[in-house]
Amino acid sequence: LTAHLRHTLVWVAAPLRAHEGFRHLRRLVRHLDVPASAHVWSQSWLPDWRPDRDYRESYSARADEGGVLRDLVHEIDYAGVLFGAPTLLGATVETSGPLDIEADQAATLLWSTDRSFTVTSRLDYTTRPTSRGVVVRSPGGTLEWDVVRASVRHTTADGESTEQVFDLDLDRDIVMGTQARAALDLLPTAPADQRIARGAPATLAEGIAAVRLCDAARAGGVTGPAPSTPEEPS
Image (cartoon, rainbow, N blue to C red; front, side):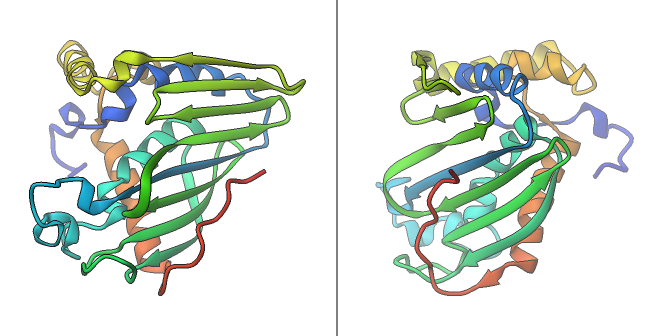
């Protein structure tokens, strides 16, 4: 795809980039001391995604189309924006579990980045209630983005904590409108800081990079029964 003459004009939808909470978090992450660690997660119950239809008949259930590593690639994408280009260190991909589907039901990944972050990620279809977000821990304090609550909490090294809530992030139409306007106003060749500040989609190259990490996890991960969900790094 990147060999196509017009590949630099292609956007890849990445709605989480359009959340004001995400953009606020990125501004804070850029001031963190490194090395640092992060845990990124998106955990939910697949039957609740589309309650009006049998989840086993959805694309998510099919091994060649769905699975958490494809459905939840948005987490991998925004982690790249926050923490830098990833190098996969290990992965466990779970194809068995409580759901009657052929696709992967859960995955746990570990990678390092070119900006001195170590990142773990838990993605699954097998958890209730829904939980989604990221926690970043560094010598200077902790940052937490709760996507479900649309909040960002900053805790300093001294233990002082402040929280901001971004209510508009809970309105899907507003989020998608923000990204659509950015895509119309900008080109994918615009400077990265400008694109990210506006909530623009991912570029084609960025989208491919996120999918490649997921494919590497699937290809090299250990496939088997579901282990206990790991705790966030301390």
